[in-house]
Length: 159
Image: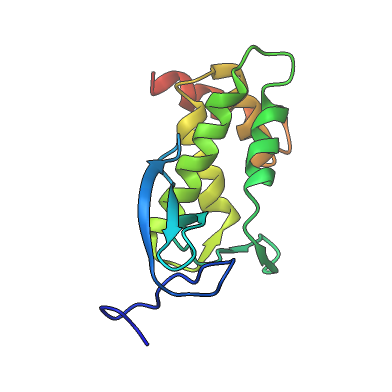
């Protein structure tokens, strides 16, 4: 049976479906809620977590192949751009989360690597100019010094 249109939480100890919430706490990131519940039948307590369901994101690569979005790839690409530069990894993790949430909020299930690269560059630019140029050089696949210089000139012109 459902209560108010949803399935009640079963007690992991006795299986009864009647429980009450005795405490709720938000996670530090605000992405989940931890609830302490008490079974009304056996009076034992258990913990549940409520999170927002996210749909899988498919990344369309330059060669047309598709793969699941992997936030670690985004994070690692930024870490490489910051090689031998000072950066707080928390900032890079925050940027990665922002990008992932932005993609989720579009409700599109597919995104190109080009769009992800643009999102990364947009966020790196104010954080560190050298890391931005390093990332851009890999992202744009510069073939020669003149194309690299054009990107630097564009960057300096927008400052």
